[in-house]
Length: 156
Image: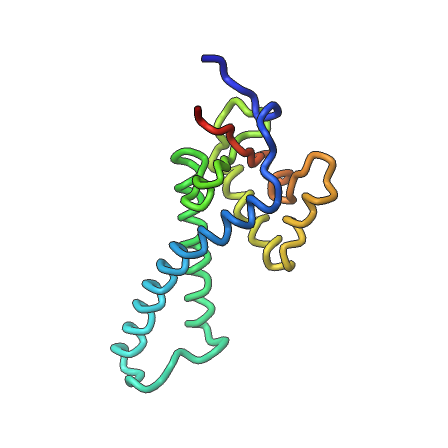
């Protein structure tokens, strides 16, 4: 069976990407809840009393947010390394590939993809919406990481 290059596959339009993000939100939130539970138990057992919450904008809260971001990155990177897809990408047949469409992206490229994608989301998704005007329909993180998201053909 002949290999199909990434350029001959249908591109992954922004709508499919948003659907995958919404789907991926659920397992990520579940992992965040576990991390938050660990922090809350540690805070309560650590002598701060059972009626106090972690103070907003405290160092501990910032640490929790950092850990949640790292959990999200771990989920994405492990999924992309194992087959180019997260759980949310599978139903819509999306896959992260190298720009050449032949090789699998290396870890460095995937880390760049995640970091730039995070920045894009923090800027109200501007890097995602950029795909609407990009002539190749690429997002900021596609370009920065030299990777592409493609939509695979249906299996017959």
